[in-house]
Length: 245
Ligand code: PTJ
Image (cartoon, rainbow, N blue to C red; front, side):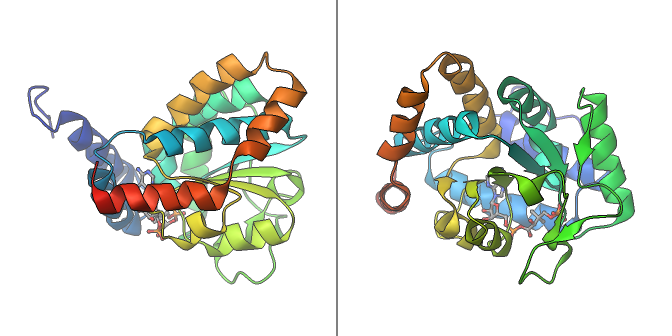
């Protein structure tokens, strides 16, 4: 479908179209359409822009990633459809690994997302095929963790997913950065750094922040991280949504 650029909701419709195309190509899950609609509703409540406290979380997330020995970014169907190129750029700037992790996992979807990430320049895409470790207390395919990736990572970026994996990863003493527009979701509630923002704004913001923060001293990065309080950040986001922007 061709969306006229003059349409007042052009951008939103374009992102919706990307999800639909991802479904047609076979790498977005059917449930990904429902998840996207839920995200759109939360984004309305934020005025479809990055709130100040979300930006603070994005800055803390970049500090955590830059301070990590082994950061890994997890990619699912919706994330691949919306921000594959941006995830690859952020991984390049920060030296992070990229791992495919799917809830509605099939070999075909996993391979298609691997191809997308490789075409964008990722040399090694983690999480694909056999030989994965299994995270404890998770019964879905989301439990898969690459023994050279998320399994041994100290910081993991997860976008648009439910909370059981975030909880398991935090219990394994990993720093979990989540990107989820719902501040009440289990993912946001359990994450070490909950970014309540649309992934299409959060990841580009983090690329820009990383460009600036790469030259920061370790002390300045540590201070940015310790100054961030996840509970306060979520309270601010919930209050913003209640009051209206
Ligand atoms: O590709 P798969 O098989 O791993 O499946 C991916 C989905 C998204 C289908 C799966 O993880 C899922 O069902 O997720 P949930 O439980 O619906 O959670 C998705 C969360 O992401 C919800 O809280 C949405 O509000 C939020 N969300 C949706 N779109 C965006 C978003 N958050 C940030 N940016 C968005 N664009």
